[in-house]
Length: 136
Image (tube, rainbow, N blue to C red; front, top):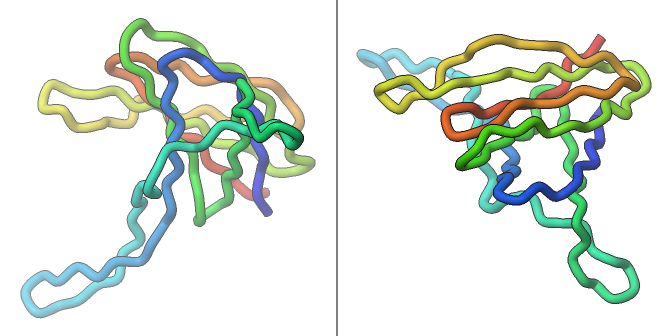
C-alpha cells in the first residue's frame, strides 16, 4: 500500500524519487544479491491544472515500502518542510542524513510519523531527508 504525500512548493527544494532494485555483487567468485536504491530519471514534477495544464505550486508523490521513497534536498539556508501522513494505518519513517567532510551522506537519526498526523523534515546545505513507508 502506498502513501500519498501532498507538498507545497518551496523555493529551492528538490524532490527526487528512488526505486529499490536488485543488484548482483561479485566478490572472489561469489555472487550475492543485494537491494540498492537508485534515483529515478528526473525530479518529481509539479501538479497540473486539469483545465489549462499549467503547473500548480503543489507536488504529489507516492512512497511505498520496499519500492519507492522520497528524498528532500535543498541548497542554501536550512528550512523545515511540513506535510501530512494521509495513510489510514501505516507510519512514515523520516531518515535525516548529514554530509560528512568526505562528502558522503551519514544517517543522523530516524523519526516515525504516525498515520493521519502532521510532521516535517529539516533540509539545507549539509542536511537531507529520506521519507519511506513502514508497514504495520
